[in-house]
Length: 257
Length: 370
Ligand SMILES: Nc1ncnc2c1ncn2[C@@H]1O[C@H](COP(=O)(O)OP(=O)(O)OP(=O)(O)O)[C@@H](O)[C@H]1O
Ligand SMILES: [Mg+2]
View 1 (spheres, rainbow over the protein chains, first blue to last red):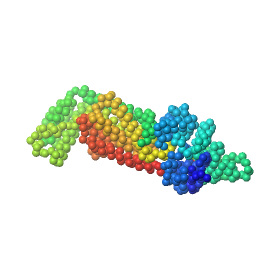
View 2: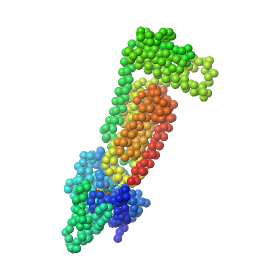
View 3: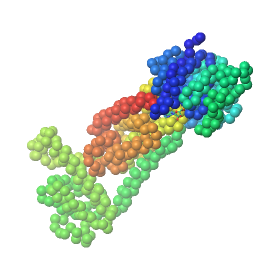
View 4: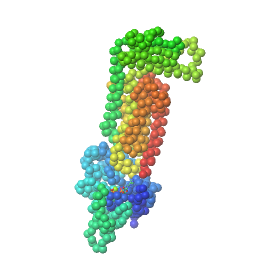
């Protein structure tokens, strides 16, 4: 087995004594599209933020590309692309200027930078809108630009934290397709969402998270087998989740929004 | 040097029209208003008919030696000084013999004015206030110099007339246009933290700080990406306001290269303080309000609202304000071509840049933890 790109061991984060991420251990291997599924407040973003060194873990260990994050994050940062849950673009900059700014943070300059801007905008389908101020974009276009700003340095690991919140089905499908393309081009993907159909559509392996804990992990087939004995069940992830937790995912996903 | 980040942050700052208006148009308007308000006042003063001020002076008053200078200063303002050793002062004013009366004593003077002649009273007051202020300052200086042995009293005695003449060399006064034209460029340079708010608020409104922290940039680079655009944009905007106001109102600046250098340092000091304040408070509004208040206080004591040579603040407060040194240096550049305050001014500004630069980058470090 290849070495894991991401390895979490007993990862825990407590806020005011309450564990919002509770002893999470998992491994993500090169070339995977790993889905992290959970309702609002499950601790998905906190987990992602700890992987990116944005939040300090209370306990546990994180390795990226085989190296301990605590001791050696600098190199890992160049190989990491992070698309935050909230939009992280300047409204008063044009699309290409946003991509230029964020790509330059990785020391890319000159011709290489120009090409990276073109490629990134082309990838998310905003090539024709490159000179439009991002404040004038629709919600879906902003989300796409948000992605373009994180891929210019050709990261090997892409972390998407709910990249499709609040956008229409067309934009969502476009983004999902593009994530598949990025994966085919060699990137390893971590994808968090509370939409089951997205996770089902693109992820090769799935972890279900609730109240800070991973309650089940595996391929969709493995997860289905956890809750039913039938060989080729047509059970949806939603039903799996419901059986595992006794709660409807949608209910509190939307109730807490 | 994170050049592309600096460039884009500058774009963000220049694209914020409110700040552009505030940093370029506002100083020009204020300079125009204040210098013309002063001109109007002087013009209306000139329309007043020449008038007479009576005076009386005690036998041993040290001010006696300055009488001829005082008469000259009064004559320049169409005021005739006439001595009335006898007579009830109030009657002299009431029956219209004199418009005002000054009773000069040993270490003080009393000014009698008629409440009916407000404009004349104002002019008289300003002539006397300014004159006695200068005389006192100069004699204090001579006394101090004598005590320190810089001036030899024996040498001065036989040649008293020329000696007092020299002492009387007063600081040349700037015109109101020159004064306000210079002082408000200085004041706005110290407001240099404001335009950076466009960048900081855009970053914080979005999740940009997170995205930046995931990148490979070092804390020093992040610091520079805030500090450099902050002072560069302010300096460019000030350059615009400066050029326009100097051309429109014919403001005389002295020692242009040195003045430009000092304004540049002032914008750098303001940027260093600004970046520090933005790091100190999580809310941009709080940083801006605190920053503006601080600048206002420093300006208040430094002569931004009332010419510093008319101020009667405790000298300590004035000397605590960096704006005072910058104002004084640049105004004296304009009136005399040199200033004894240049050194202090430079040390103060460079000190501010260093101290707040270090504090600001230390807070940058703190922000990474969470
Ligand atoms: N800085 C913080 N201080 C205190 N509590 C926090 C902090 N950040 C997150 N939490 C809490 O931790 C829990 C997990 O939050 P997190 O954002 O990781 O959830 P999530 O799974 O990403 O949810 P969502 O689907 O809404 O994005 C929430 O209950 C949240 O209130
Ligand atoms: Mg989240």
